[in-house]
Length: 88
Ligand SMILES: [Zn+2]
Image (tube, rainbow, N blue to C red; front, top):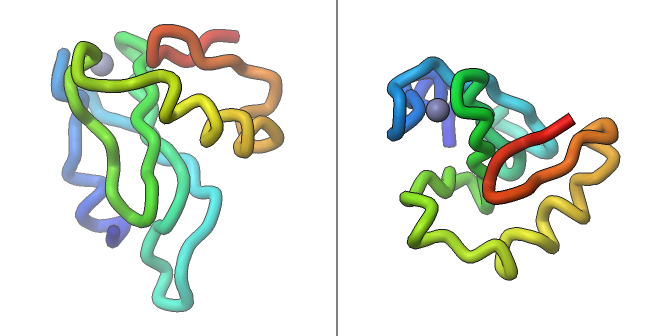
């Protein structure tokens, strides 16, 4: 996903602006992996293969997302993910 497109996204719950953390991008600068974070409700939305996962909590499966956050542990800088929220 292009950064310009990502910058237009807002949190689906409270419509706050999201912050982007890049983990990897392609040669054209499109984000392949990373996450969006809402500073208001602290939800974290992973970007997988260029697609942000922004479904309602009830439709998300932590078991599926957990390996991603484990893989990104280094990038999360000591923060943890619980109930789809990023906690210190
Ligand atoms: Zn939010």
